[in-house]
Image (cartoon, rainbow, N blue to C red; front, top):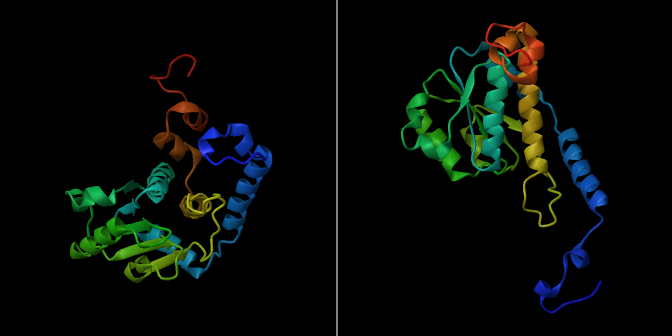
Length: 220
């Protein structure tokens, strides 16, 4: 490889890597992180709490973890467990009022140190909402202390990012844990494809999970 004093003088090809090998490595590291999840009794307890919950299910998180929390709420809602996402920053501007004492909050944070999430949970306690399920990794995570139940992502998740900064393996773990909860609840509730179609009536999944109705286009 040609060396340059000024990196801006180099072309893309001189910094390039074996693309297929790099992509395969990233996929493998994310798959390994998922395979290393230890499904403990706490996971079963979390499912039972959600199954018996008389209140609402609220998910939260910030940054990339927040996107997983939003997706989790959407998956739960479409599979028979009504849920919604509360953005921790917006919680401080009135959205905290969506939360009540009988609700279960599921908080996502790899470090468990995201101040917006911790502040939201602290203020939710003032409304009587103390049932928090924390999904986190770091052993010194303050989120652990604020949670009724902790679902451990694993303590040493190696991010395949060459900078060791971009969360991808950890996000894949969050995704897998949340999907496992939602789909287990679906089965325990005896949720059917017909029920799925009532909630997800559009698009390809809607078309194959329900009968046609009068609002369908001819080729829908």
